[in-house]
Amino acid sequence: MQRLIQAVINAGHGHVFQWWHTLDDAGKQSLLQQISLIDIAYLSDLYRSRREKAPAPSLQEITPAAVIGLPKSEEESVLHLGARRIGEKALQAGEVAAFVVAGGQATRLGVDVPKGAMEITPVKRKPIFQTHAEKILALSKRHGRSIPFYIMTSESNDRPTREFFEKNRNFGLDPANIFYFCQGMMPALDFEGKLVLDAKDHIFTSPNGHGGSIFALQRSGALDDMKRRGIKYIFYFQVDNVLINLADPVFLGYHIEAGAEMSAKVTAKRDAEEKVGVICQVNGKTTVIEYSDLSDEQRYAKNPDGSLRFSAGSIAIHVLNVDFVERLNLKENTLPFHIAEKAIPHLSSEGKLVKPRKKNGLKFEMFVFDALSLAEKTVVMEVDRNEEFAPVKNAEGEDSPQTARDLMVRLYAKWLNDAGAPVPRDKQGNVLGAIEISPLFALDFEELRSKLPLSYEVRLPLYLGP
Ligand code: UTP
Image (cartoon, rainbow, N blue to C red; front, side):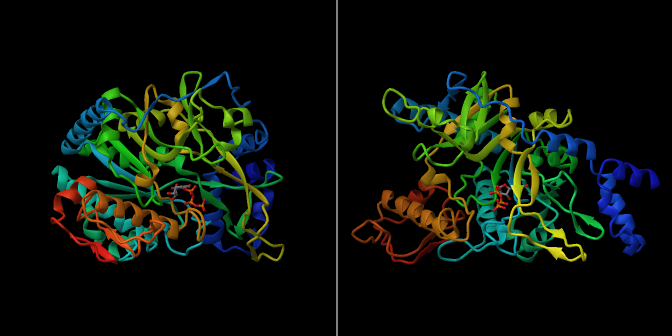
């Protein structure tokens, strides 16, 4: 014990023992236990390197990623169909797992329940988790094989997430096919590079980023569980995308056909200024370049036809091979940490918790898309954002519950229209009421069309459920 305390003091973090004399044995034990798990030398290295950034690649060094575009010809539709068949075969063979990352803190949304527990659907106000669960149920039924559901949480929302599923009887999923696990946590540092206490016996930590999932999958035993079940492909998505086309067989099919290790879905950027990471090739490797890392020259670069040269916007939907995730776990620190200035809760000199509004320290996070450049082979596939991407990030305005609901209504209205059931709209084309189609009624347009009676009359609000 004395050795550990001395090592921490020598490393310049003696202040974490500031309240030691006031702690009971359990408090002392828990602080020491936490410290023993922190790699202080590694943290110091990260702190020292905080301003070092590899120079952004020049316009000549980066090229647009090869993207499988939206099918525009008969020939491309046939290719999509071929890919779909391959993906469906993998689903029927029970080789696909659904994996949602739900360990984030949802600070922008500011709700006191896990993000997935937030009520979202336009008519029934079903929670986000239920929309995912219903898709998994519908897919399992369609393909005749249950799809196991892996849910990554973090310290702060693990219990409420499990309790939420239990309370709702797992939304009809078999609990034997749900696997929860916690991601890793990472201590923050203040601007001087010091650990921060948020209780007299506790150092402030936060989830280590969605990239932490790569390591948590292994550490938690989830990968072993997958191997036991014969899973080969992990369909990765974020909890807050309520339009997720879960386990999309076309995407899976292209990934499998190409022998890829990790793949990504993209949507065409709305314009040069849209703040999303762009997938490109850098030195032959598929790489996501963050919006802020693109130079103006790169951001505005155009193709001869006037379209944006770098337009493949990343939407955080991936397929990863179980083998690939296992390989990434063979070495330490495979993914880099990204450093962000944040407001870090800390103790005042009187030992009271302070929650500052101003940024006062550094958080460290890994990003899952950094694994793309470590894959031997990748597939990048474009999809229509109106059909597959409705993120819930903010309480109001852009990317909020309201925009997500509007996008759901717009998509369901399009399906109904295309299936021959016109939807009441105003002169501007806005749908005059709410529409909700449960995945248990129809997972996609084709299924809706096959189920809708002839001359179906749409009355709003409309809910089509099981
Ligand atoms: P975001 O980066 O949007 O974070 O995560 P967030 O927690 O949802 O929201 P803010 O930034 O605090 O407002 C995108 C996805 O990655 C997951 C989130 O749960 C969400 O599904 N995530 C993020 C994790 O699972 N772990 C993390 O450490 C960070």
